[in-house]
Amino acid sequence: MKKKALIFGITGQDGSYLAEFLLKKNYIVHGVKRRSSSINTGRLDHIYQEPHVKKRTLILHYGDITDSLSVTRLIKEIKPNEIYNLAAQSHVQVSFESPEYTANADALGALRILEAIRFNKLEKKTKFYQAGTSELFGLNEKTPQNEKTLFHPASPYGVAKLYAHWITINYRQAYNIFACNGILFNHESPRRGETFVTQKIIQALCKIKLKKQKTLYLGNLYSKRDWGHAKDFVRAMWLMLQQKKPQDFVISTENQTSVKNFVNIVAKKLKLKIKWRGKGINEKAIDETGKTIIACHTSYYRPLEVNNLLGDSRKARKQLKWKPKFNLDELISDMISSELSGYY
Ligand code: NAP
Ligand code: F7E
Image 1 (cartoon, rainbow, N blue to C red):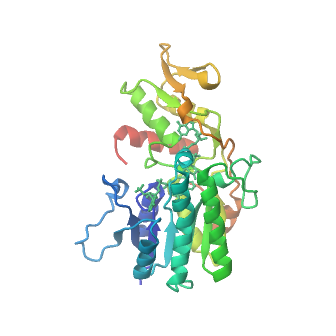
Image 2 (tube, protein in one colour):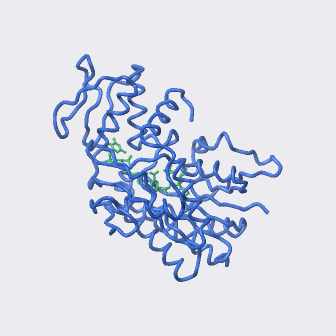
Image 3 (cartoon, rainbow, N blue to C red):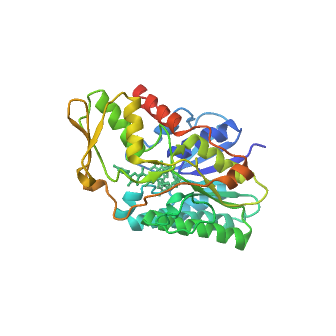
């Protein structure tokens, strides 16, 4: 019998890579997509199977993580062996503008799934993965951060994910559900959403190189992140659910870079010669002709910033035998070549 997986958030960056990964492992993959006014399954086009296809291995259902009835009904009907909760309002800055919705989706979403597992008496059958985040560490700038580091979330997004983290542990302890938190540091790819800083920088600098855009506007250039490749990170999610005991794991590359250095690497790869001038909000990068191609704008600064994230993933490396295949240079090259070729 093939194993069945159910992915909430299948249309997102990680959901699409995880679906590909599980299909290769011979799973039947069910995914939940939201109704939207324009098509939101672009990241799945290459693996999508029409409903008339016999013996489908990828099946999409309408649903929403804020809608308990659809969550409970889908879990009752599918009775999956594994559930991956990747569904979230995942943008930190947006969470300051839509805090209540972010709490509903990102905090209570996890609760709805866990409660549906219990309600449908699937505690012994269904394993659960919760997409946790390095944003839980927030203002705790003591690096590197691992499973024992104190959480201090610094956004409505981080606070909502803190609830999801603890409710996952609570259901594991109270009801013996095989439930794991992955505490994942930033991971990117050619499928990364366009408003996250890595993709925003790559898309804009490629356009600037091709003379299709004049200026890229950014916020804080000095925050540091531990950026990995999403393909590596979805493998870790699956590994967590294959262990004997449910546990929580930090997943990271263990290398850190600032936003400004990320810009420098991309510019160098595109052979754009830039020089930095000025300070603070007036800092900018000029090209060889003296034109400003990168500037800062207040609208991209957050009410509260997480400045310093660097993961210590020794536990995952030892117990899951996980390590990333991509380094930062390879990640950036992958994103640039995909952007320049115009395909996912
Ligand atoms: P993403 O690209 O923004 O994908 C989020 C997914 O959630 C999309 O499929 C989205 O659907 C879906 N979604 C949003 N609200 C929903 C709702 N109310 N009901 C059902 N589905 C909903 O995010 P990602 O980068 O793949 O990240 C996956 C998960 O990992 C998220 O939970 C994120 O918070 C977490 N995480 C990400 C990172 C990272 O660096 N990427 C690091 C740590 C943790 P639409 O396509 O319709 O919008
Ligand atoms: O910002 C700075 C910004 O939005 C990275 C999500 O996947 O990873 C992601 O959250 C840094 C921040 O990602 C711009 O202030 C400067 O310091 O790409 P980001 P994030 O906030 O780290 C975590 C682990 C998640 O869990 C989240 O779901 O870059 N920055 N200028 C900017 N950021 C953006 N977006 N846009 C700018 O113009």
